Amino acid sequence: MSDQELGQVFKALADENRRRILDILKSRPGISVGDLTDFFEFSRFAVMKHLKILSEANLLKIEKNGKFRNIHLNAIPIQMIYDRWISKYSKYWANSLTRLKYDLEGENKMEEIKQIYTLYIKTNVDKLWDSLIQSKITPEWFAGMAVTFEPKIGATLTYDITGPEGNKLSLVQGKVLEFDPKKKLVYTFKLIAEPKATTDRESRVSYELEPIGDSIKLTVIHDDFDGKTPTYFGTSQGWPMHLSNLKTFIETGKAMNLPTMH
Image (cartoon, rainbow, N blue to C red; front, side):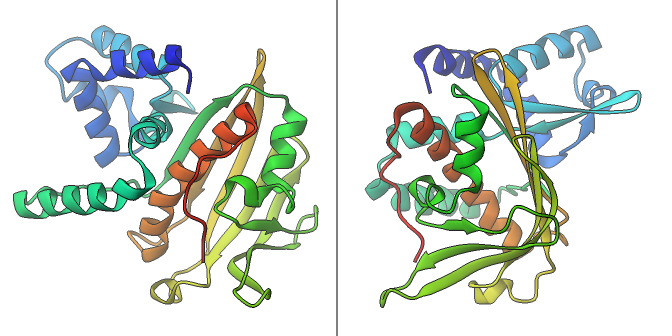
């Protein structure tokens, strides 16, 4: 994350009304602009000005749905700030202590049922596409996981790691639903290595790439969950870390020193 991008995020978070908007988006993902305005005493125009600043900081994603616009929180910039100042050694204690604080204070930290992440990566579409789908490249940024599949609809897709004895272990399994080279990939997602998630139904992941100037806009959507399942909670913590690492890897040529899957 550049200093300019960092400044936009801090500017957006500096205002208490914009922080409240993000809280509302977190608890009510997909809320319309009209319904969001009802939470405030000021005008719809003022709400739109706040949304513009949040959008410029890449802290939200707006989906057009006919005449309506639905708004979702995008946690990637906040995750990147976290990664910049929290080391892998202090991360465990930071997570544990904040979780304890929330439990003691009785705060209900609701997560989104539909996870949407948007980030802008300064690269070309070929390099980003290859980084997302090439099994020789994905382990560099995806916690050691090789995304393996044939580039065709209906093909089996797996997230694979190398076991302690050199054997291949699959952590995630799915099927390719859509494959539009350098534009879009959609696949089902079944977390098969986590015992708590064995009864979860398959969810769905999509990657969408859009050239914007000298960068590529990447939108990752993970949806079709059956409520707050173990798969949902696990991926809601994993995607922000993985995607911020992807951006760092592509723009600097070196991934962050994050834990690998095992």
